[in-house]
Length: 106
Image (cartoon, rainbow, N blue to C red):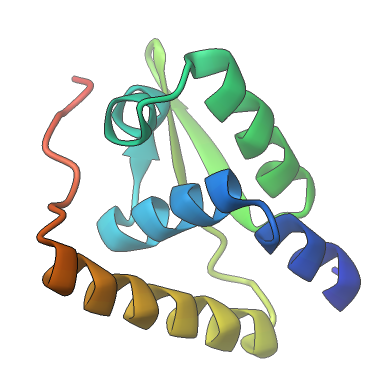
């Protein structure tokens, strides 16, 4: 993965929000993302497709549900950037009172 492509992908707020949620929960279904972000399933799926294409997230089908998780084989520099994003998100959540995902798709 080229660093330029990685940072272009992170430049979109929706993709950043998706990654924060995937990192926070380890494994997330599209229905959880649509609920938490208040966006339509096609919009979430379009952003997930780009994240999958760059191998930032991996998908796993279980029955009718598709779950997404962070690719554990990301380069160390990418993991470091995502760690910073996660820490920043946790600080913001504590200050604003936002909660984590509360629904399940099973």
